[in-house]
Amino acid sequence: MALEHGGRVHAAAKRYGIPENAWLDLSTGINPDAWPVPALPVGIWQHLPQDDDGLIDAACNYYGTTHLLPVAGSQAAIGALPELRKHCTVALAQTAYAEHEHAWRQHGHQVFCVSDEEILQSTAEVVVIVNPNNPTGRLYSISELLALHERLVQCSGLLVVDEAFMDATPEQSLAPFCPRVGLIVLRSLGKFFGLAGARVGFVLAAENILQPLAELLGPWPIATPARHVAKLAMADRVWHENTRKDLRVASLRLSGMLTRYGFAPAGGSGLFQWVKCLDASSVHQTLAKQGILTRLFDAPASLRFGMPSSEDNWARLDVALSGIKR
Image 1 (cartoon, helix red, strand yellow):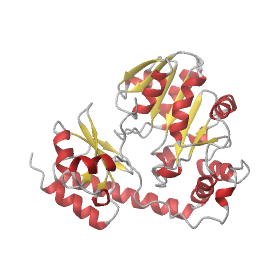
Image 2 (cartoon, rainbow, N blue to C red):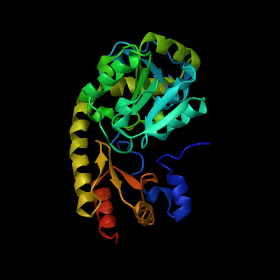
Image 3 (cartoon, helix red, strand yellow):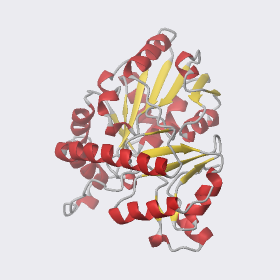
Image 4 (cartoon, one colour):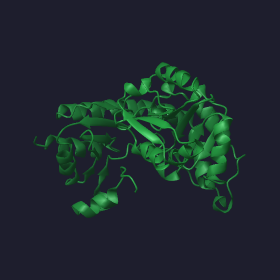
């Protein structure tokens, strides 16, 4: 059974009778000001992907590592990694990106969902951490994760860290510590770069993980045009720095706006804010009736707000929040 994700504008349009192009989609956590994709070279659609096209070098430079595997978005790795390990115990945070739990359970592993604090002391054979966590925004420190990894690897364990939202705070990444036995770091161009449709991700790990994973996923996981765009985007250092500055400002602005109307965030990142509230479903529906889509969670009752894309949309959200009666 497919899990629900953000970005379901088509379904929302049908449910609320509002045209798709009239929606303000805040449900995904994808940067609304995406890296500006230039015109593609003539003939690029006729070429098979090539491993020596410079993408791997660009990614290694961007992440500060020496070994990685390009994959069709980090989702491809999330679904495949459980196949590389015999049935074992797996620990995940209770509130986190649900595809991890789904993938490990689907492949017959015994999964335990624990609190954010308990996961750092887990005795499971595999520990999966989303950092910063989605949707809570919890950010585990490098020292916490390296201590956990050291303990796991002594028992032939494995630490998987999904850093899909890490690009806004690269100084907190474990990428420069890869490759390291018993450590897997997942990265993606979907969130920070705003290139979710390109389906480009990377697995940073030791060769004993990368080689069997590559064999499992097969050749040409990323299309040639997507590889071309990813290579250029990852080399654009000026855009990276400017975007990180802009996201810091926007994150504070969104947190302040939500707080002003009684929705003080319980956590967040450079690309979203997370609000816990018992009336989350009601608030979600009230905003949806005005063409504003948020990401609703049931356990705990909460909403994730992504970043508006323009001053008009910031004003639209402000007006909508100000009119909510609680």
